[in-house]
Image 1 (tube, helix red, strand yellow):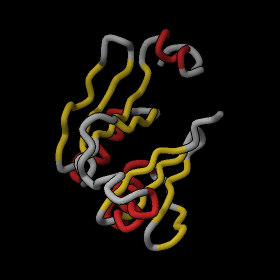
Image 2 (cartoon, rainbow, N blue to C red):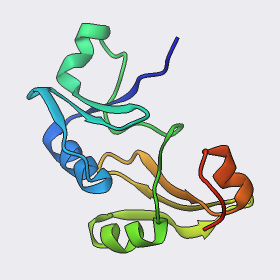
Image 3 (cartoon, one colour):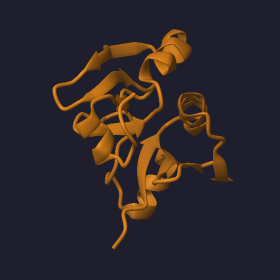
Image 4 (tube, one colour):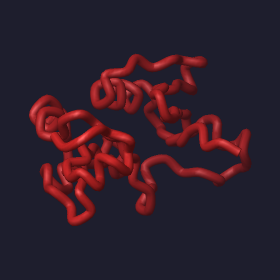
Length: 136
């Protein structure tokens, strides 16, 4: 078994896709007006319309209601990404901070309120965990 993607359900696919294109710098691959994907080397962020929920089961998902998951993206320089994105973020939860486990992390909410973590491993141990050579 291989983990392949995380899907967010939203009432405004265009808005959320545009936000994640800005954050990741990756162009979305659109299936149709109700579904798009942001592909990365490790996994895919899928974004689907709330109009698709009945296909899975009525009430099985609800847009803008997540309070338990954090979408995480490893980046080369979290401080540079913070400067690039700062004016586009409606809610910054934590400005870039070095965490006890060796990652420098930025936590913010997307337009639907989902938590997003951009992080850069900064200690040798954290960099090794992600297969990154040496210290920065």
